[in-house]
Amino acid sequence: MTVSPTYEFLLTACGKPGCPFCRVTHDVEYRYLDQFFYSQVNDYNSRVRFRASNGFCREHAAMSMDELAGKSLGLAILYEDLLRIAQESLEKGQNLAQAKGKCQACALREETEGYLLADLDRHILQSELQTALKASAGLCFAHFAPAYDRLRGEKRRQLLDIQLQAVQSLRGELAEFIRKNDYRFQAEGFGAERDSWRRGVGLVTSVWPREEK
Image (cartoon, rainbow, N blue to C red):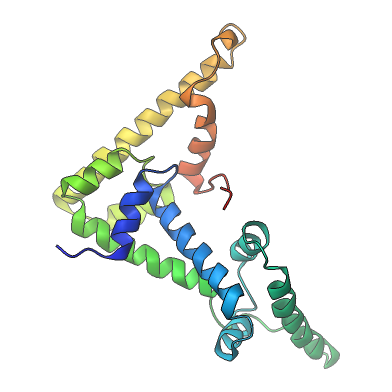
């Protein structure tokens, strides 16, 4: 059976920390932004779309500043252009322009999430994906909800079982982390549960620790 590139990305992401959907979409966004700063800053059509969305959304502006190397010149060029447009409006006594388009990185993320949901629907009854998902951290709440709504019958039951296992396992680690913070047990030292508090936050909020590139 021919599989999509996102399915291969999903299988790989299941073996790494965090929600596999979050990891795939983050990596796609990162690659897009990296390529954007490498070759599209001065591209006419890219600049038109950038102006229409008033630049990147808050999340992708932060990603551009914090995670990408060598992006300062590109950001300076792009946002000087937006500030020039803002100055022209202000000098005419006009309000600042509101965004007329979506952040391109957001649009790409939504497209990727659609592919991931389709892959999950297509393959979740196959042992390869089931095994991978069971070894993962589970889906964050934001990605589990649309997956649950999309799947039906045995597919939904499989997803529920896998997610319940992930939640139960993480709760066990959190309980152990909490116990070892009691002064009576601090001498035991922390094991795999050391970062369970971060993973708990991540599973509920989709906010995962930033990884170095």
